[in-house]
Image 1 (cartoon, one colour):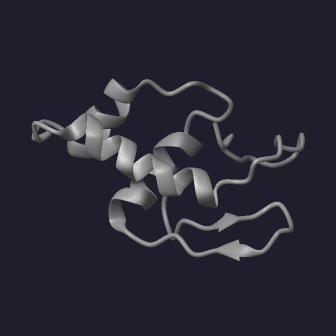
Image 2: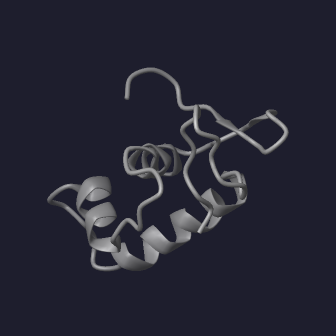
Length: 85
Protein backbone atom coordinates (compact mmCIF):
# COMPACT_ATOMS: atom_id res chain seq x y z
CA UNK A 1 0.00 0.00 0.00
CA UNK A 2 1.28 3.39 -0.91
CA UNK A 3 0.29 6.72 0.52
CA UNK A 4 -1.34 7.63 3.80
CA UNK A 5 -3.30 5.16 5.90
CA UNK A 6 -6.85 6.26 6.65
CA UNK A 7 -9.31 4.48 8.90
CA UNK A 8 -13.01 5.32 9.08
CA UNK A 9 -15.44 4.37 11.81
CA UNK A 10 -18.85 2.78 11.24
CA UNK A 11 -20.36 6.22 10.52
CA UNK A 12 -17.74 6.99 7.88
CA UNK A 13 -15.82 9.51 10.01
CA UNK A 14 -12.04 9.53 9.72
CA UNK A 15 -10.29 8.17 12.83
CA UNK A 16 -6.81 9.41 13.68
CA UNK A 17 -4.18 6.68 13.61
CA UNK A 18 -1.01 7.83 15.29
CA UNK A 19 2.24 5.97 15.57
CA UNK A 20 4.31 4.29 12.91
CA UNK A 21 3.94 0.78 14.32
CA UNK A 22 0.14 1.07 14.61
CA UNK A 23 -0.13 2.30 11.02
CA UNK A 24 2.11 -0.56 9.86
CA UNK A 25 0.00 -3.05 11.82
CA UNK A 26 -3.19 -1.74 10.22
CA UNK A 27 -1.67 -2.06 6.76
CA UNK A 28 -0.61 -5.65 7.48
CA UNK A 29 -4.13 -6.49 8.64
CA UNK A 30 -5.69 -4.74 5.64
CA UNK A 31 -3.60 -6.89 3.33
CA UNK A 32 -5.35 -9.97 4.78
CA UNK A 33 -8.99 -8.91 5.19
CA UNK A 34 -11.30 -11.30 6.99
CA UNK A 35 -8.44 -13.59 7.99
CA UNK A 36 -6.92 -14.47 11.33
CA UNK A 37 -3.40 -13.08 11.12
CA UNK A 38 -0.85 -15.07 13.16
CA UNK A 39 1.19 -13.14 15.71
CA UNK A 40 4.40 -14.62 14.28
CA UNK A 41 3.63 -13.13 10.87
CA UNK A 42 2.98 -9.71 12.39
CA UNK A 43 6.18 -9.87 14.44
CA UNK A 44 8.24 -10.89 11.41
CA UNK A 45 6.78 -8.08 9.32
CA UNK A 46 6.83 -5.34 11.97
CA UNK A 47 10.41 -5.98 13.11
CA UNK A 48 11.85 -7.87 10.14
CA UNK A 49 14.98 -9.65 11.34
CA UNK A 50 15.52 -7.51 14.44
CA UNK A 51 12.55 -8.44 16.64
CA UNK A 52 13.23 -7.58 20.28
CA UNK A 53 12.91 -10.20 23.01
CA UNK A 54 9.50 -8.84 24.02
CA UNK A 55 8.16 -8.58 20.46
CA UNK A 56 5.04 -10.67 21.18
CA UNK A 57 4.04 -8.41 24.08
CA UNK A 58 4.80 -5.32 22.02
CA UNK A 59 2.67 -6.64 19.16
CA UNK A 60 -0.21 -7.19 21.58
CA UNK A 61 0.19 -3.65 22.91
CA UNK A 62 0.11 -2.36 19.32
CA UNK A 63 -2.99 -4.41 18.56
CA UNK A 64 -4.99 -3.02 21.51
CA UNK A 65 -5.38 0.50 20.02
CA UNK A 66 -5.96 -1.05 16.60
CA UNK A 67 -9.07 -2.74 17.99
CA UNK A 68 -10.31 0.65 19.15
CA UNK A 69 -9.96 2.33 15.74
CA UNK A 70 -11.11 -0.51 13.50
CA UNK A 71 -14.79 -0.69 12.60
CA UNK A 72 -16.63 -3.45 14.45
CA UNK A 73 -19.19 -4.07 11.70
CA UNK A 74 -18.61 -6.50 8.83
CA UNK A 75 -17.42 -5.09 5.52
CA UNK A 76 -19.90 -4.34 2.80
CA UNK A 77 -19.36 -6.17 -0.48
CA UNK A 78 -17.74 -3.16 -2.16
CA UNK A 79 -15.41 -2.01 0.64
CA UNK A 80 -12.27 -3.29 2.27
CA UNK A 81 -12.11 -3.18 6.06
CA UNK A 82 -10.33 -5.18 8.70
CA UNK A 83 -12.41 -6.99 11.32
CA UNK A 84 -11.99 -5.76 14.90
CA UNK A 85 -11.43 -9.22 16.36
